[in-house]
Image (cartoon, rainbow, N blue to C red; front, side, top):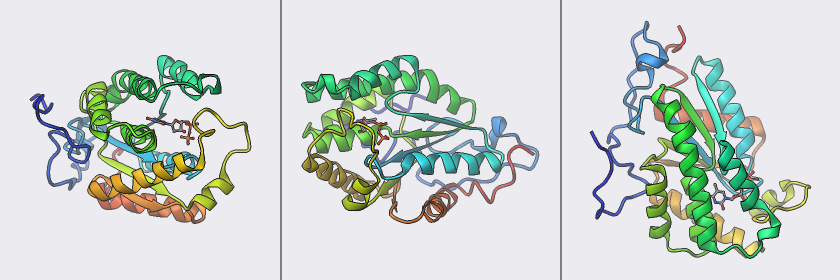
Length: 259
Ligand code: TYD
């Protein structure tokens, strides 16, 4: 069945087209392998499970994503981690353009298109094939980054950014998004000591708009986006992340899919 929305129907980033209303996952039979059925019926319309991490630079999402990947792997799941922009040869080339301070004059529309192009390649080359294989895909940033940074941060019309990204990803939405939000002071204290890239060189007001954008997205889509306070110790935040994943999908209490 084609899960794509009607061309004239405005898609909604919270309600992935074709998503089941109930997100409960029934544990597979004891002898099922992950490839066969373990994650069947979960959200993205594929056999796998797609979880994205969002937040501002310095919120700790890359660390938390790595810890979740480790926990899921230990629990027997076949996990793939990737990042945006990047994750493919083309995506990494686009990343170096996007973050290059030499392109300080890049227009907001060009920026949105380049992020969407990197995303389109990642979805087609990496994410969809992995989900079709029944894997758990964890992605450091995805569509919500474009909504928060290019939409709220740059001031592009949100509906345009949604439409662009629905097209770029052929309607692939995350099953769950973990948004790590931290106070601006804490975030700045954690910020990398290396030279700032093109985005990091933005003025403080830009990041406040992006942070507000994430808050609005989370308010609008509470079923998909789980906000977690990223201010605590790494282990505490990790517990909150695993608790959210467990609450949504029961992955840690299910029988080991590798058995
Ligand atoms: P990166 O070094 O990966 O930042 P982080 O470690 O915080 O994820 O750089 C990616 C930058 O690109 C980051 O500043 C956020 C920005 N970005 C967008 O503006 N729009 C997007 O769609 C994506 C994916 C990232």
